[in-house]
Every structure is written in structure tokens, then in C-alpha cells.
Length: 149
Image 1 (cartoon, rainbow, N blue to C red):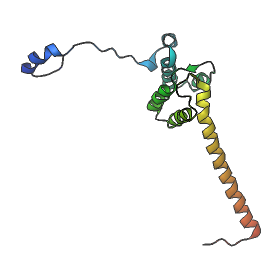
Image 2 (image 1 turned 135 degrees about the vertical axis):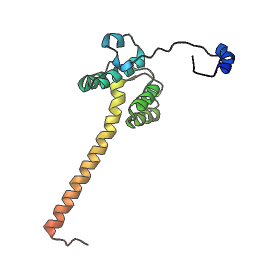
Image 3 (image 1 turned 90 degrees about the vertical axis):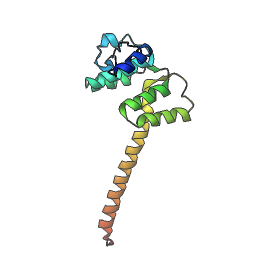
Image 4 (image 1 turned 30 degrees about the vertical axis):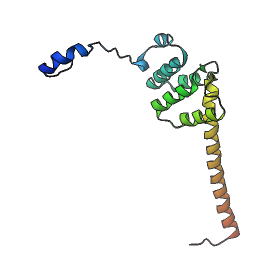
């Protein structure tokens, strides 16, 4: 029971339930135990276990498995964003809403690939800017254009 003054204890004791709280360390569970979980919660528990155990290859294979379906994609993405603080999960959720797929079961691999597409676009743009800057530098050198400054 809580450590409270005796005069208050007598008044409050009948109102306070003294139940034990069981805490489960989801990420520390073995694979056999994790298999008992179902639906999207299983995806979350497996993700936590793979990250905790630093099993990057297993995590990559698991997330890329096209047989895995996410029944509630928006809720799953909200939880993954909360766990990882990775804004890509928010972007995926926005894409699903734009495509009106937020309420239907979706393949985990396809859902996560959508973030990869956006990442690829950013990397291509960054690479293009670097190539353009290098080309401009070479052109200035070849044409011997005096630089301002």
C-alpha cells in the first residue's frame, strides 16, 4: 500500500485497490513466447526483440517478408513512430491517407517500401546537386571564368 499518514490511510484504504502489477519485458521474450502473440502486436514484439538483440539482418528479413500483413496500419505506424522517433513512419501514414488505404489490411513490406521510395528520391536529388556543382566547377575552370569575390 502507499506510504501515507495513518489518519488518511483509514479513510482511503477502502477506496484503493492493492493489486499486484505484472510487468512484461516484451523485447526480452524468446521467439517461442513471441510466436504466441497475434496480429499487429506480434510485429511490434518481434521488432523490439530484434532491435534489443541487435539482430539487424533478422529485422531486415522480417520487415521485408511479403507474407506479413498489418491489419491496422495507422495504429501500427503511430506506435512504431513512438518507439523509434523516426519521422518516416509519419510520412508512410500520410501516404496511406492520401491513397485512402489507412483502413485496409496492408502488406508490411509494401507499406515500408513507400518510405524507401521517398528516401531514394532525396538521395537522387542530393546526388544530382553534387554532380551539377562539380560540372559547374569544371566549366568555370575550362572557360577560365573569373570567380566573383
